[in-house]
Image (cartoon, rainbow, N blue to C red; front, side):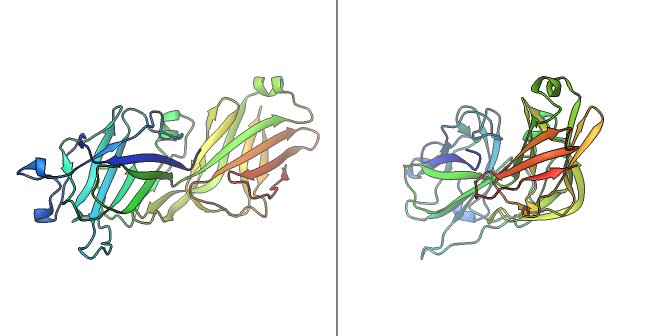
Amino acid sequence: MFGTKQLFISAYTLLALTACSSENGGDSPIPSLNPSEKLPISISTSLTSRATDDAFETGDNIGLFVVNRNDNGSAVPLKTTSNYINNCKYTYQGTWATAVPTYWKDNTTHADFYLYYPFTSAIADIEAMPWSVKTDQSNLSDYKASDLLMGKTLNMAPSETAVKIDAKHIMSQMVITLVPGNGFTSSSLAAANISVKVNQLKTAATVNLATSDVTTTGKEADIIPLKENDRYKALIIPQTVNDGNLITVNVDGRDFNLPKAPNFQAFAPGKRYNFTITLSKTSNGVNVNITKWEDDGIDYGGTAE
């Protein structure tokens, strides 16, 4: 499933690779005395492969914020600093690990948990964290570097049971599949020199860590997707899509341009969009069927010339 990945924050020992900070004075998550009297926080997960698919792999880093609630149970807003735990780095090494044990404030105070992936050491504003996707995602590492995940679990009571956090994809995903039509065969396409690009989309944004809201910024650029077996895929900043040619497929020097379908308006966060492109010489273009990852029953078919 593309949309979410599950993390579990449980009350065992929290081990990670960088120290976690707090600016709440006596509410420090790292007590100096009698740690045995504190209830520890830790992260565990059953997911063991790649963050850009449906799981995490060894070496992935996430950042965690923890915000204690008021004594009356009311929520306290997530801030850039001065949270109970500020941007604590966890690294996956079969289990999630951080440098020092970290603890709940006490046995009664509820807390809100916020995470994001990948970790960055400096966040100037949690309401406007800069993010961008690579314009050239043809290399697997650059495709992976374009993925952004966020999740939150609110109003959790201190406990030794696991706190589950669903880490959701904030970007959109395009999956483009080329199939032979009139004048092509599977073997002729396999032997052809083919390139694919997504035309003129925003590649930068700011993201709110508390709400996961995305605001596009900057100029538009072409995006080169990753070729994976017989399909091409790219991670896209959520955004509305202007009229014009959305995808260009070049086959042995000839461009096939796919205009945006009139009823296709925007890329939404966490959604996968499948573009099945039938290449046909006789129609001098491309016959296209676009289906949203969550099937909405609409046929976005069209012809590109």
